[in-house]
Image (cartoon, rainbow over all chains, first blue to last red; front, side, top):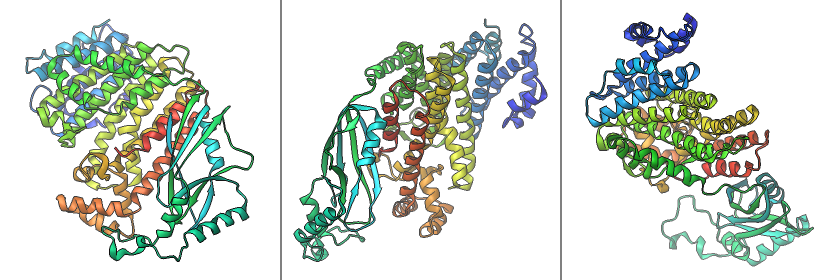
Length: 126
Length: 459
């Protein structure tokens, strides 16, 4: 993903990039080797956005204050839009299922699987 | 059936206003082929008449009314010392009420072959008896339209919603079920269902799936909104955040946000998924703007429009466009419907803002004021020369019950609500014009009726 495209996808989320999103993005880049090189950065960013989004919301823990919740919502929505623009249908569905699993567990007060594990599995969906 | 309002201004104390051409135009635009146009005056000093539009004859009628109920006559109705609960601006108009009794407040006109059935010399008049005033007539068109309006397809969506909530874990499904069962207008799924009939590949079951997903998505956003706005009630019931705590509300919102996007992805239509995903992103961005703008409450018209386009109109537009995309309608149709949905969504939100000031809405008056939510009536009232300074002063301070009630009173006494209503209706007419640019397989009357009904409501 070119710097310009990345910049566009981070519109309104620039602050998060410096506060850990960049690091998460790089860590997910290591998980997308098997995909088309052009697609890899987009998938990594989509995964990083979900990861940071649910943390911002406090999903499964104490509820985030409204401003953080809305920022978390935007991360999830941005991730979803990036996936619809570029990822295959199985990956889109797998990402959605990962969030369903996390939030279902949070609502049921049961232990949720690790976010990263779910997203790495979603990235491998085909 | 199409229900709408005919609005007009009178300019004289007594005036015969010929509405024939306007009613003819509405009949043509509606697609009504055989049926009836029902008119009802919504005022006690406005009558209806079908007669000849000949200026001297109209003067004769005016003379007759004057002789039967003279303007300078004595009327007990005008003796304010004997009446109770009269408004401060109560007019002296006993003569006008008596004249109205001589006319009718209702009329039914027949339609055949798509045209009003009127004799050569017949015209339809609204008869102003106490002008000048702003007036409106209720108008309903019923009968056979160019294309049959789909019935029963809403049931498919309800079934699909029930089915989807039945298979979810109870901790998320129960609160969502309570929210959905409490009501909601189901406008967005209705738009999906209608527009999905416009392309060559209309499949009712697949359409119901998309329509249900759009409704689920809408409700998921409401669950988070209610937490952000600290709302305690929605649709007359406690919000998820109020009933079950913010942690549960966040989880329920996330679950259904994800589930809706999955259901939409499962349609396998890339255009549809992209349209809805873009709308969802716009909603989230505008929610952030909405909260940020509460610091500059009540805000201005441009900021309001920007927020409302995202917060409300984005999903209306996406619902319209995605239905058409699902059935593989042409890009021209998809674009026209997107614009229709966008305009309708903005108008819908404006009317929602007005409802906040309506005692008959079933909601506590002034909720938006309390929650410092962007609201166009408030923006206009704050700009008003008469009430603006007091509105701005009150909004700048802390808002207790008395202050909220006073602001609501000031808004209601100013021209703000009328301005917002006019603006919303103008947007709906713009939306209707978008529909005229493309072929809609006979669904135009239904889409027109739906748009007008969305702004002619008080709840």
